[in-house]
Image 1 (cartoon, rainbow over the protein chains, first blue to last red):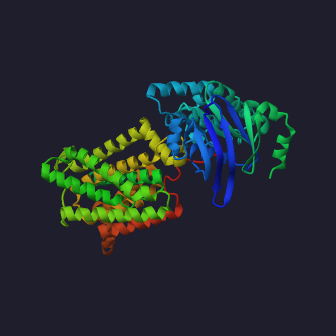
Image 2 (image 1 turned 120 degrees about the horizontal axis):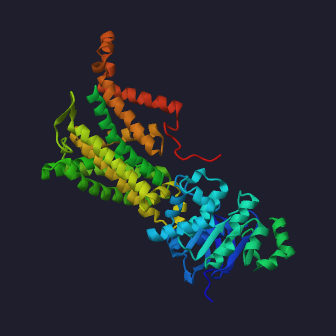
Image 3 (image 1 turned 60 degrees about the horizontal axis):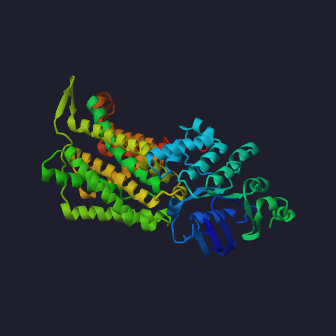
Length: 236
Length: 305
């Protein structure tokens, strides 16, 4: 079985500090996988090392079976990795439509079709089409960041903390798109602090604690596993 | 008086091209390109050289100057910016300063030290509009600047490449993570900036003389225009350019426009000399910075509360 994403003993260090310790994980085509853990568990570090914004200090990283350690971030994105970062980071001076356009590498007609498709996923964006990124509410920015990551038609979508700063209602609206996206053929890696929600919308999950993998399994099973909650509450 | 305002406008138009290019690079890289003034010199000599060799007006020579300057600007970014892109901003400060010395010395070696005159954009005469005679060079300078600024606007707001250039200027890391080739975008930005500055050089080379050492003066005026208008603001760059040009043209001509002023204070005539106008400009610049440190148009993109 060829995985869309696989890490083997992946480690990342910030100077002397180990942020991720020999992490081994995989994501299958078309499945949604959650990375859960408290603040500082290494979720963002892992996501950033997958897209190529952080270098591995050790270990292997395979995308669609190919070693991508030496591939720079912009080429990894072109290979088929979509990235929605923590804090959304929409382009503030670009309109909603422009934010989507710049992230598409298809021809003009296909780009228009993709944008219309995004507007059917989140109709709120269509109403704001001409508004500049910075004028959007947090929820709208999050929707835009997710759609922008989908514009390159990725085979793997990385979502870092999409619920951050959103109301419970908006969180639901964003997170409940994940099973649909996965079903449509794009594997999803969701980094979330919101444990309950993350386990509801994914197939499998990895539980991290201070840079180390402590638990993994089907999301439905982890939901009823008391030690998951303890890992969270135990914090550091 | 109208001729005077027109000269101001024409000078401002040329300065805007300079300031816009400077701000484009500033936004795309976060670095100050101190070789920007030298692009004027190189563009001016390119125009003067081609003009006297081909015996053609500036408007015909312009596409060659634009293309040549794009290449020079792109090369400069590969030599002076690319290797230092992850270093502190001061490294790029020094490397572009070195490049400016190299560009101007190369110009000196190729063309010699004597001042050169570039070809007029269309022709060097005047046309009569009503009872005012308008200088064709001033008129065509304004027109050409408007065309170039409009072209630049269309590129940045209508083409995918232009939108990506803006995205890179706003968040380089994010642009990279979304698949944009940020390094190529920065080379293109330097190319556009150099082309605009080269066009300004073509204008100045005819209106004034151009000598290989002129880069520094243009650099300072660009810097003042960009800072006064608001660091990073394109609209501000145009307003800043207008401000600089106004001091340069209008202050020395105040005695002409208002003879009564000098009549009342004959001993103060020196205050209105072209040299003194520079002092007034920088004093006004300091006053603006004192009351609006962010410049007149600072913060084009605001933070949502």
